[in-house]
Amino acid sequence: METETGKRRLSMEAEIRQRRINMSTLGMGVIAFGVWSILKFYLYIWVDSAYVKLPDVSPEVMAMVKTFTYVFIAVFLLMDLGLRLYLGLSARAEGMGKRKGRTYIVLTALLLIGNVIAWVIALFNASLTKAENQSTLDFYVSLLVDFSSTAMLADLLYNAIRLRKLEKAKAKEG
Image (cartoon, rainbow, N blue to C red; front, top):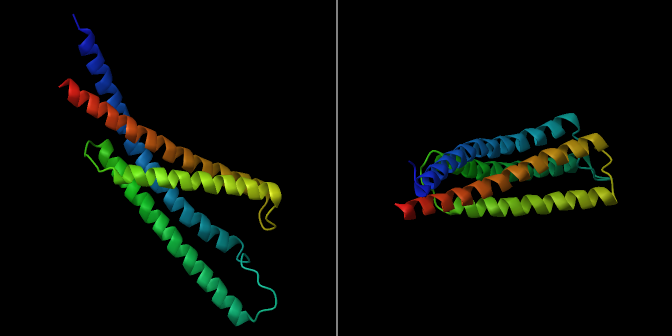
């Protein structure tokens, strides 16, 4: 006959396994959204390269401004991808049972806060003005994808914290 402690331990081990699976899956999702952000940027450039509009400037100045803008955004996106790679690979490693430090959890929380702020700003701006080069459907699809990325980060943060608590409780039980 199983004891109550034995049942609780089995339940805890099952939840730990589930959280580890979630961590691995969410880690890959975070990486995928990082890759998507770069692809999205280059697709926007390819479809509509008229994002930078400066009235009454020479074509040479316009070319320099566009180049500077694209390089700046590309560097920013690569930094974002690097961060997401670090978070995703750390989550996957933790999902495989390798203990990672708290840094990736803190960075996940900061990225989550940044995404929420960006999401709120985008909604606020959409209520004030409508971008002339973006259809309503494009805007809402983009917003949905960004919301999905934010939700994934929130889920990753929750699972990371919950997994830590469960592992700590399991270690206390012996």
